[in-house]
Image (spheres, rainbow, N blue to C red):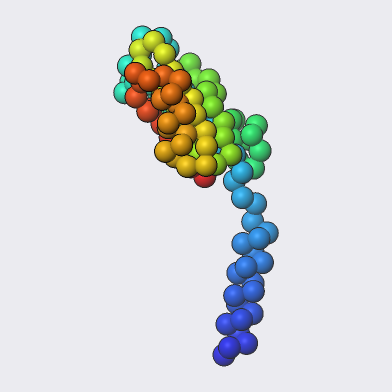
Length: 118
């Protein structure tokens, strides 16, 4: 029984190592000047490359019914996008709080529109 458990555990570990990790994330937003933060549209994308994450974010943004999507930020661990009717801020970092702090530092009177971590 112990031998089967050990083999099963080794198989699980090998499969986990073989599966590609989603190394990048991105946000595409539809946030024209004059749009309130709670009215901004966005999409989140993940991928094994930056390009793949950005393409997935664009697709998700458009699938959500937004017509003027553009990639706003890409990140490797955590990212954030903040905005108000005039300004926006982007952030990235090791934690969601760090990414949000960076986004709000660039735009202190903004509201976090989207933030996420891998």
